[in-house]
Image (cartoon, rainbow, N blue to C red; front, side, top):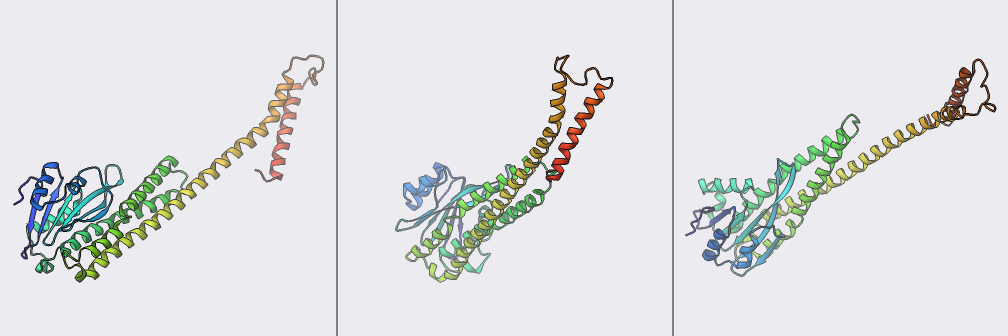
Length: 314
């Protein structure tokens, strides 16, 4: 009988059992290995860091690794959480980190009452696996909704030039990072679940639940389609933002350039008439020499403004 701090065993009326290991440590994994004769390599894969998704047939059991997204409220980022499955003919063992809330809640629900559903009237681990995977995949959809809301918020702010441009680009980068992380997590789900269906026939009757497992595959397709759409949208918004910023920057540079060119005649005349040449300088002895020079400067400036207007640069 398993007896460890982070190991819970849920017994169903048919004899099927679900062993739940949260926050796994080496001690708990050694206990599992002795009880079920799991391969040491599989137990090692249950420890950090995260391993790539895969399914391995060990003869007497199947070992499967999947990753699922969790939303870190402190950082606003999507992070991966690994779930390890050991599937035998009359048991399912799940090893995961306690921060994966839906799996912990499902285990707590069945630990309180293992007769909650009629589907456990037969001794078939495929049924329990369907429940677990279905719960974890449905947990992804609220995060997809949150991503969609984040994209909508960025789209509204992108044309508001009173909004801080730095904040907008940071938000776009955060969303892009979350979409990439989400896609990386979900990328192998379809193939791994399909392998589970194909290789589980000798251990349990998964083919009887073909339609149920096909729903799981469809869920992974739906999630991937959502993520692909979000990726295209946020990439388009990023390009739009870059174009708007570039256009605004060009307008500013254009304004400053025109201003510099208009002011140039004033600077030129001021420099010329400031030269220390007493004999050759015109208007030097004129009683209204200051106003004459100012008038020349204004005429030159007005000519420049008229020229720019004619060229439609202003």
